[in-house]
Length: 474
Image (cartoon, rainbow, N blue to C red; front, side):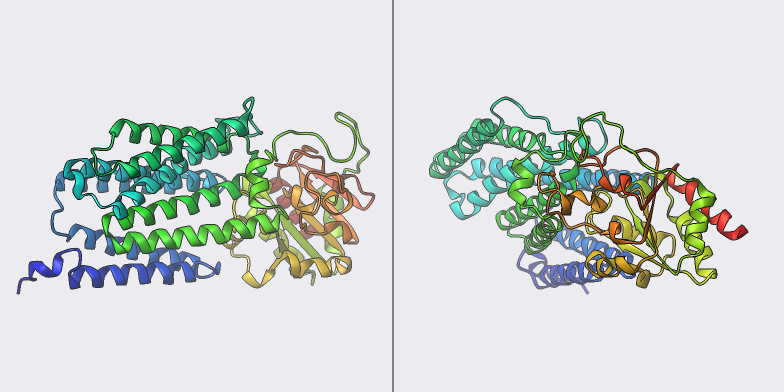
């Protein structure tokens, strides 16, 4: 039995039902994604929801150009699958930034297409549809170009430090004012053959604003910036949904926008900084600072794998603090083997997780889950800190700024007030790191120079393997 065509129109029952199913799966998938043990399942559920939304959209009356549509689906799907398979976990933040930028760019192109469609129908283009088109064009263009700059910084294509132009804030303010003025002009004249040239200038101005807004932000703040741009892409998609009268796009965009906004606020709180400070302070760029003058050699203690193994093997409690260096070295499996060796000797081993360790939220959770570390062994910062004074040995592997005591002790430090994992309170500290180089914040870590701290200068994976072997020999 054939389906009545009326049901396949934008307001038709079948399409509406499919859209409801799709965004219900989006919501359920996001909910499952809040826990590491169910995150993969949640991602698959949301992906099924997206497939249903695409099918529902293709059922709409008036959809044509099937060759272009399916060609785009095939090429885009192939690129996405290949890129996702090949990307390393250390490069996942760059991939997130790139995907987010693609979303923003797509929304900007949709807005331009709708604007051209509005020119064709002239005075019949309602203002309530025209305003979302302008909003989607501006925010989508900002998100696309800003996300590409963020990708470039994380990929070391663009300088990771703060890059400022003379009069940077003035330039940004003038661009924003010009964009708003142009949008108001087009809104007033939307029924009188509005200029496509002005619309293109709006897209270009928004592109420059996206680039100039992200360039001054240093690498330490890139996770927050990516999350904020992700929220912006969601809002622009929702605006495009209003213009297209597409309920699935409205709901999906709103979900992305709201979740991205919440995540941005949570990450800023974890760094004890406001979002405005992240955007306008240009933090995270210059190296140096912290304790000691630039270039000053500060005394520190270095040990080998055997000494580290002895300290760990005869401890009762050990806390491992993973960071970006662990991800770079792909050391999660070696660290799990070390923890297993210690567990055989009756040592209690737990992992302290800082909210912004690595380059994106949940980075460490995903890495450790990859190595089958039991979730109950992962302890959040606020829960592990009270136990630090009773911890025999804290092992810092690749983490830097999130363990720096200067955040608590030095009110003049760039990271002053940022919540940290208080490893300096442990009885003994072992830091596995290639060198004494600073982290993303570009400042010296005072932890390295404490009397209770011993440095193991080596690749994280090799050091963990060597220490595990030494523990096994004891």
